[in-house]
Figure 1 (spheres, rainbow, N blue to C red):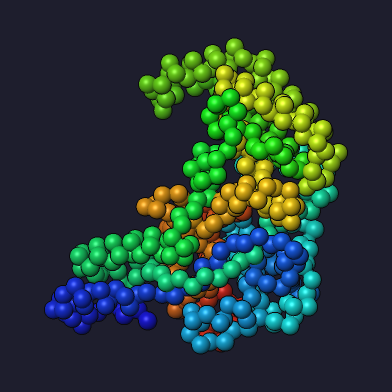
Figure 2: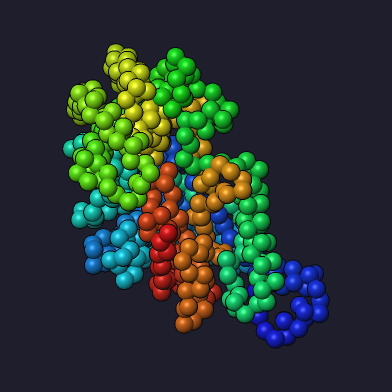
Length: 478
């Protein structure tokens, strides 16, 4: 239990030196369960276990929560019977399944989330439940993916899969944590605040390495980073690895074809719109002062190669149209694979001479593989080569940066201290504790509050009684 700041504490620390300071700081340590994602293969996406996304094992007697915007989106379910074996519960025996729902439009909602609780036997008997028919589509995704999704809107299997957040198992890892600003922090002496901040940051970085066996993973690998990860990729003709079309079997699914083509069209559209903006007065934008010559050359280059670029867009649309006749999670036949790869290889040669914004062949191919992992993990594990599968799965380990000095946990978490983005203290009228927190998780297509998180808080007295109907949801935006 954290020792509150008081005059007596100040006197003791003042006379006891650094050892007494560190004892006081250690009193603010909190236990928590870090919830890391694992592939929901082999039918585990429908079992009553801890999961992120998918469809909930919500008993029929419980009404699907709604607010003024309509049905809330299912976020996660947590199996208390499994979790309560950890010491973070302090001997409290919790049971049943918790269901977390959220409104991805937090600025519209007075209460951006809800928590429901079901008895263990109820959840175990409940099949995965479909969302209400008026649940709005989830649109928080990169622009190229949005364009691709609209193109596949009439495909039943794609529509069914993408109506819900991608389904991942959640596995609990015990961690210790320290709040960013403990209660009364601003009354502490400056030297003590500095020591605490330094200790907190050091422990946070060390904890990442400890939890992940000392390996510092990353979530958004560039092709270049994948090469550094120890799995060299063939670079045809000595080109930069960013222009590398993946191994001999790619595309492994029609989803990869339509993702690649959709992203290419998205970037071409953006590049042509940028040229129009530049010609229409963007060259006078003060933010670009000193870069006028470089941007003028870029605009001229795009104008000179407009016919080639528009040809690529038309060819990409043809591939998107062809994909409509196929299950996006099925494999193209070898003849289609060969023709598509020849087109991409030629595009790579042309791309080095006519760059399209930030479009890069390898990264766009990786994006398609990532989508397959999210929405059809059983297919992905069957069709992707094991070495490549391991590399793409690096995107799903719980840290955002490759550098050990700047690694940041993706904090899906049960109990402990919250990840403070805007507020260290929410100022509850009665004592509350963090029940669960879910973080923005780009590789699972989960964005909360524009890259922030959503926290579910429970009154202390309700936690002791295992009562979950008065939980409060708070969204912190980045």
